[in-house]
Image (tube, rainbow, N blue to C red):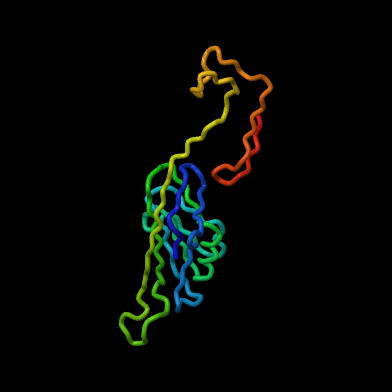
Length: 178
């Protein structure tokens, strides 16, 4: 299971949200045997919040991304700790998640295809927008011609305090006064 489409900003440590789903894998017969999950994307860096006992390999098979190897339960714990993504390139991207059971268990005894590796893939569409920092500044004045610009002859107002209260796009509280 993969999350829905994501919107991220360039040059930030973005975290995949769990809306409508969190990253999660399942394999009915893997038990405690190892399985493998590849998270691949064209550019940038993918990270796992807390890998625990899961082996994490960067750029598996020469592809950009990460590979997690461990039990289903341990991989789900690692995925649940947070999957991060950072890129400097604004554009639409696709993350591909592929689960491979490594041929552990499964199949009918005597079947020549028994215990062959099985895999399944899903994708997450990502919109990466360019982050352009901005500043709030200026001064209060009487806009006599109502053009929203301070023109020659429009007097500034002394002693006016301007307060900005709210949250940033990262939901960090802001309370600034000038």
